[in-house]
Length: 186
Image (cartoon, rainbow, N blue to C red; front, side, top):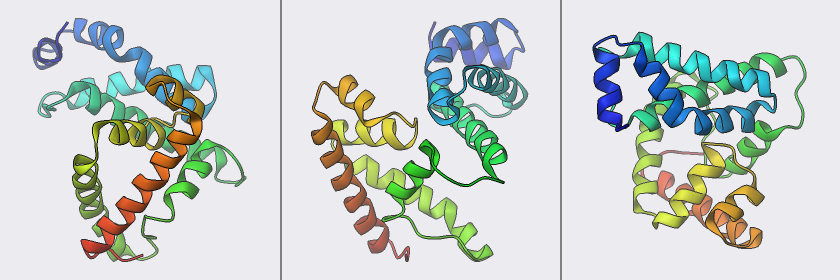
């Protein structure tokens, strides 16, 4: 079923929209949550919570890309759950690894004013990603948005892990230069 048809079902408050959204996007949403949380039950709960949030938000929200909208909700819910579970015990884990990798090109947010810049940063990151080649953008999004391992990204793009690491390094470097050019300080 097309995204537009599913969105129309959401707008008409047809509960079949939830079934169709889960059928079409559930696997990807589950994998994204699982990559962050590393727990099957938590990942399944996040998918259900994502669909509930979408049900509550649509309408009036009408996203251009239903898949991207649901993925963003899933990612945010999973990160929030991960943060709550790990607030007392900092340490390893995929989220810390991903944040460490991105730290070289992302500014710190120690002040409230810097939090305001988060929207500008998101816009700049999206613009930078838009300038990247499709493969580089896909590798970046799978790694840093969906939390995929280097091995899984390499497998999906049918390339070596060293090639993926190299692409990610260049993408982070390009992003850092782009953010600096936009006046976003580190």
